[in-house]
Picture 1 (cartoon, rainbow, N blue to C red):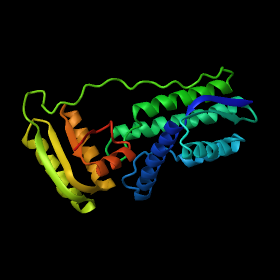
Picture 2: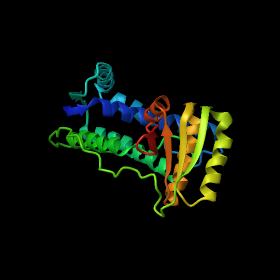
Picture 3: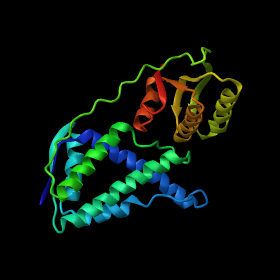
Picture 4: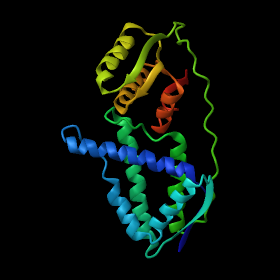
Length: 256
């Protein structure tokens, strides 16, 4: 048989792959550290290898999608040949879907990972993709991908619910591992010394590394739990870092 993925969103697929790969890299680091690992999701590469063996055209399809992405193609109709027992293949694909859900649950459960839970638009795509593959393996008719509009959100306000003015924390220069402890302490102090929202002004910051992003993610979770807001004002170069890591739309990131 042959699977048909109609109007397949190439860019969204690539973003979903990059996000899953980022989570897997961090899980692998935790496995190496051992004592921090706890109960981690299984390794995705084992399931991917199994799919590669079961789906005759799986690897060729991945290569084709990479080529379309490199060419700037937005959407394409994709065909994937499948040999052997369809139900057995459906079970294998469901295992991958379950693993990705397990990864998301792990991201949501604590602050050990820098990579955030899968953004809503990628979750919508993933749900469609697995429904199509598993459904067609079990006899369903192909259904084309349709773009979903993101839920409308009110523009973030600079004032807090209780009417107070946000506290501003200003940073400058290049922020990396050496600055993490100081920045974490500054955000902790801001959190405890006021009940208002907090703005971190990064206008004069040239660079942030993954450790600093992790500090912001952890602080964001604490502010959200307290029904407060932590906003980050960033220049264009730093904004790009937040885009590449998938944090735009999760954190309150504002242009300087």
